[in-house]
Amino acid sequence: MWKGYFKKLAAVMLIAAVTLTVAGCGKPSESASAGTDPTSSGSAKVEVLNLAGGDNGYPSPFTHSSRGPGFSKMWLVFDSLLERGEKGPIPWLAEKWEISSDGKEYIFTLRDNVQWQDGQPLTAEDVKFSFEYFAKYPPVANETLIDGKSFIEKIEVLNPKTVKITVESPLAVALGKIGATRIIPEHIWKEVTEPQKNMTKEALIGSGPYVLKEYDKEQGMYKFEAFKEYWGPQPSAEVIRFLPISASGNSAAANNIVLAFEQGGLDIAEITPDILAKYQDKPDYKVLENPSFFGYRLLLNMEKRSELKDLQIRQALAYAIDEQELVEKVFRGAAVPASAGYLSAEHIWYNPEVKNYEFDLEKSKQLLAGKTLRFKLLLGNSNEEIRIAELMKISLAKAGIELEIKSVDTKTRDAAVKKNDYELVLNSGGGLGNDADVLRTVYTREASAPGSVTGIPGYSNPELERLAKAQLYEMDPQKRKEIALKLQELIAQEIPLLPLINTTGYVVYKPVKYEGWKYMYDHHNVTHSKISFVDVK
Image (cartoon, rainbow, N blue to C red; front, side):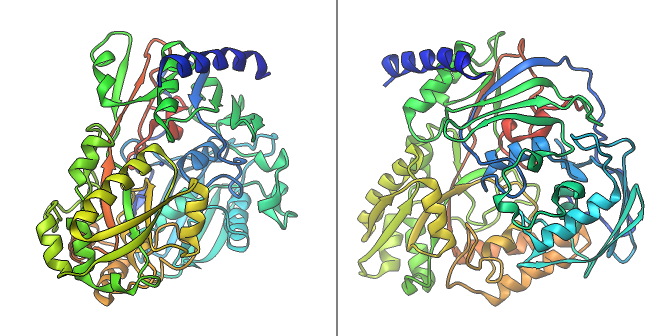
């Protein structure tokens, strides 16, 4: 099936080698079908969409990779009660919901005539089963945990279409987390006791708009076909193919993507600012600028290197890194210096008043007070990360801080972070548009226990932890926002990790082929967005 297509793609790649060197919070007493109902926009369906990709694991909730491309492929197959729309969470499997006045009970009403991809009906029993199964067998992302413990007290099926979920305490993030949990079929999973090893065809029976038809792990290829009996907004493509070529890693790969796009092998491509003029304001192309919800940061292990507990040392590091240089020399202007308060400037609760650390070598030297420090820096092997590390090494050396750089593949780097096996790590990831509770999960002691791919080993701050907990339990959105603003101020003063830059970047596509690309309200990549692949307004 793949052979003929990939002969053509291989030819494109050969030419390139020669010619070119991814949550809303509800109010108490809320009755909702909040957000936009996923009705049809009337757009035409395309036969095939070809996208750049690579291996992101088997797309069940238990076996996909833990980064955006892995989640997005799994979302094509598995639905949730709510989905992420362009402006916020939108009704999906649940057509409406009610929240009790005390904020502890959530009643979801399911849509009519929803069926699994094997033809069995989806009922409230499947919803109940999914939450209980995930509590016993955690998926890649377990949305129902707070600091490693489930916040759900009990789940009751009221009738085949209605389920009531009771939480232990009112939580600002409860609706978003419950709504984002993928629903799996009880009749498939009830006898499975090792879901991380379940690579069967049945493991990919979901209720989503697409069915996985082909997967080649070695080649990193996926073929999804539209689920003909899908209950909701119709799939926008008959077939979606993810092909083994990625823009991350080196400039040759990025060039390959652009050439494949121009020759029709791909239907959307990431582009750099230096070639933007070639496509912008041209009738055959449409260009989108990504929101700055993906970024690079420097993680500090204060258990391995206790001197990093000294605020002046952390400040010296911050002042000695020229973020604007990274923007210009690494990302060619398609990025912005990150806020020291962590949240992106495009986040709805971004605090523009936080302390920031503009490049100042003299101030860095003053803070070091004659000390000479040497750290081991671990990073991935992407072209961007290597270049960032090289530039940081040069500027930090001028302040008296030496870096020993070690580049490994991304999986090895992430594994080292989970095991706290590093001194400094250059890390990257999205989520910078997520609910402000991300500040708690990144910066507090409980949430940054071993196993986190962020985390700050050896760091704790009672006031930071107090504010982080307070925003979690504050049900008044305005009061919660005020806490989040204060939390960003404290984070920026403390800088337990160093946010470096947030990328923007561009994608280009040909509207004559397909123009249904949509951003989720809190995510930076249209190809990770489920609503890009269904005919929803």
